[in-house]
Length: 499
Image (cartoon, rainbow, N blue to C red; front, side, top):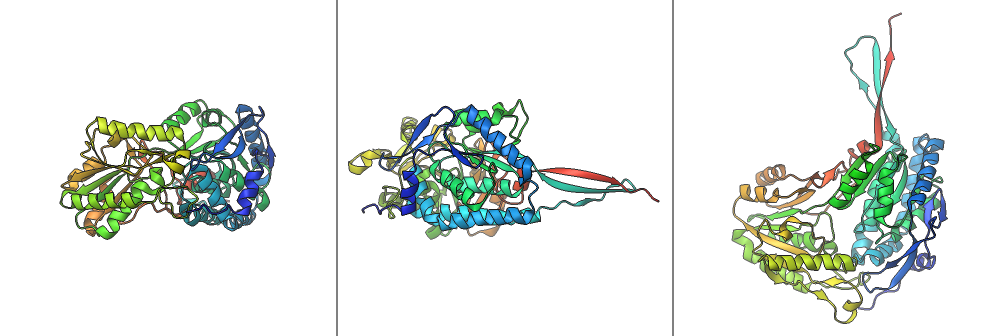
């Protein structure tokens, strides 16, 4: 199918290349003058040139954010912060189609996904958290010391550094930036080098909405340079990260010298379990979407599928049929189900994992190849890949692949599958498919993960907390819990002596 023309606003944004850094309310080149090229993973075409920030640029952004924090943003009347955030949300909603196209161009996510989910969710997250400034309250503490009145205050932490990955830039960005700003903090956002364009456009819309200079800063470039500088910087009070476990460890090491607060959402190897009493008309398509949604490039991908032995063959056959019929193509094709892999490096990583599975003795049931014929040769495409006869100690069972690769395992008992599901360093997400209510509660309680979906998968809302156990990090996005990420609690003691 021919690729539809880009929205005029998308074309206009791309034409503004080279794109600069947003620091202190102004668009500025990197201090070094360095740039890098953004490439479409769908067809290898050049999208734009972007500024590549360095340590000096981080220093400038921190100084701008600190000035904005100390000169009015934190003390702005709650209703004024709410008004500005709602105005920003209105603009994001109005430009949803453009933002969806920019994300699909940049990271290869199918346009039907970015248009119906990512750009709309980004706006809704800002709407949701825009209501918080007037609702963050303290409490009166019933202390047991006479003649004292004690109350608490929630105060912003200060300057928040936010580091996000390339797979869900609009959603990851707004689920972190929105509550940070709502709580009265100022923000320095570091988008992934591979998917910065939609965040730069959000920066333009933030200025249009009237956010004061320095409140929201966006710096693009290499994560190894900028992320390290942000974690080490004493002027940043809090770092909130979504990324790999390796990225999380590097941030922890870099921040150790200044003891800044951290919240880390890291890697995953999520188990997805289909019990024999499940509604298979829902469970099998649900498992397929969990594994292959966004071409498997998801932190919560259902990357280990456990199927009860009594239904294993039927479930496997249906999954194989679905995978064979899935449309693989350009991210902007509205019929595309599986888009490209984000870049050549990730493509090689996935293919190496597939080869590892073969060499360790797993059975390759389907896929396993990079597609290179015709238009596929211009981008980075891998067939949906399914393995069986996979041991729990194989590399493809232990490590996060972040691609369209699904090992399928048979199990017999509930206790067995809970133990195997938990046999991982990670604990971010899990799925359960069953019509037995008691079993659903037992297994949900038994699995060590920050979110467990029952008879559904991969759903999020600003009102529900999200984060990991074990090697998947600590701290939470969304929900009331994110207040802990972006505020400090102060106790105030007032002596009330008797007259």
